[in-house]
Length: 162
Image 1: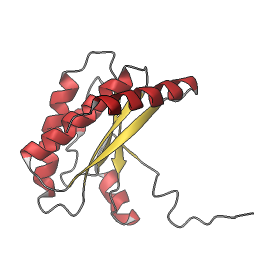
Image 2: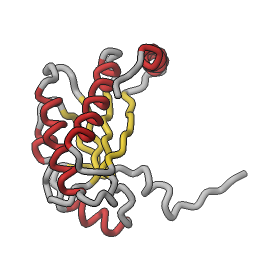
Image 3: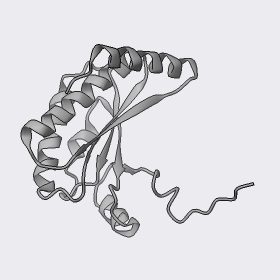
Image 4: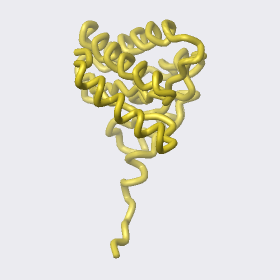
């Protein structure tokens, strides 16, 4: 589903505010629950549509099409995802830089082409709910992917409330 005009206008307003506050970039998240070609392509198309709108404001979009780790055909979903992402990356202009936030794949180094792509600043690993030890082992086998600390900063942390 592509953005409606009122959604575009709302995102434009948010991006303008972000630019005014010195923000580097922003992300949008989608979740893939099945290795279905039409569904995966629709998710990636929407992610890049929004990403291009964010790029239009001079911000860096963080493309996050998460593959749910419980997807029954996760390996197929990841293969479809990589193909759809590469198609979109190859269509970008040289100055259009993005970050990718992707679930750690079942197939080691599946996203190596994304890591090396001229339009990609960084590929950030999304643990997706794997236990920390398992996620660390999986990440170590995927060269060039950087850890995302969103869950790691909260798991096992203790907070002092005044």
